[in-house]
Length: 448
Image 1 (cartoon, helix red, strand yellow):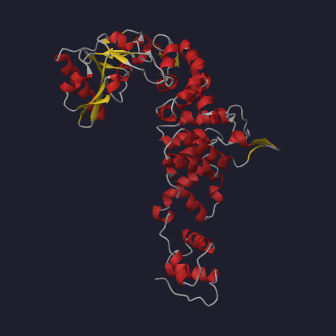
Image 2 (cartoon, one colour):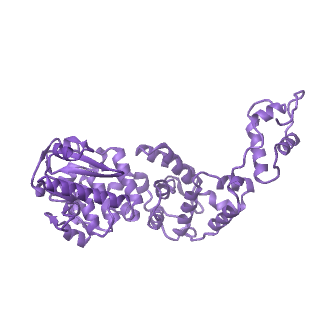
Image 3 (cartoon, one colour):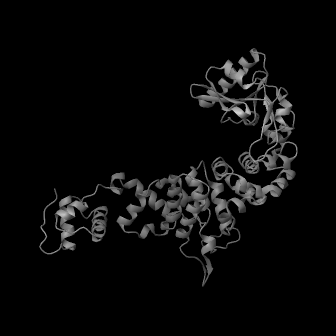
């Protein structure tokens, strides 16, 4: 619905601009997607109307990139960016031009854009496409090609290197050889890009389809070793063949990425990083071992995501996925209380999916997955996180001194509750008094 509203708004904007005597087209990614038969995520309009005239024509418009002539026009929940045709002057920071000049020739505007498939303009009324850079041919051939000189394009905005990877992976395209070689030549410049911008492109690579190919292209272009050296370290790290017949750690992770279907950001990162602790813990004794790679990996995941400026909640969720992914080996032998605590982990659906992919990309034994699925189906949610029967205040009233022992006592009470040994506060207090004796002379009271 939102996409249809955005397209209708974009077409209305174009019609009004043309009635006012201006040129106007759909431009960029929305044209690419329409020609590929895909639903665009958003719509952009290019026009020769200066920003002030755009604002005068649309009362609800506001400048979002005054320096670059970008105006946002909104209607209801739909929004469309309207950009004045321009050429860019020199780039000094590897991100933005130092100045721009507004243009009336659409060819000049297209020539400063990133890739040929993003340099197309479309008349939504007639279907006419303006193609000054061979974008339609590259769409048909499945190629990501820089417009003009690729060295210049990547020197202007270093993030374009990662965008090339994202477009190729998401569309199932190849990166044109000269463009890919230019990425390799300029790869060190990605260090100049802010962690936030790199993070956002990485999220798109991992969640918008083609995640495996995206990681492979990052590796082939040399970007992976710079952005995620801990992941690059997985290559060539062997695994026990009886558990991992698929090969090394890198191959295992690629297979999991390939099998993901519409993952959340945190699940995708959990898949990518769940075995990031294996390279630093690898040792060969009587067999291959990765001692405590889950705990080491959890720490590394936090370091990586902190470095890339992920939100705290996302970091905590991925840390939990990595930290707990080995616990699945023991689910069928766990005490009832321990198993219920495991199943009560927040966002347990992500833990389930991570384990399923982990199994399918290795030994393919899903016995533990189905065991847990059955357990979840037969256990009411309130039985996984029951209301506490006793509190610290109750223990004090029963004659216990506050101290470190409280946590042990309350933990045992919770264990007994989860295992259905006790069901009421009175039974809980009796359970405690039968196992723990309060200090001599302390007054005992019942539960209030």
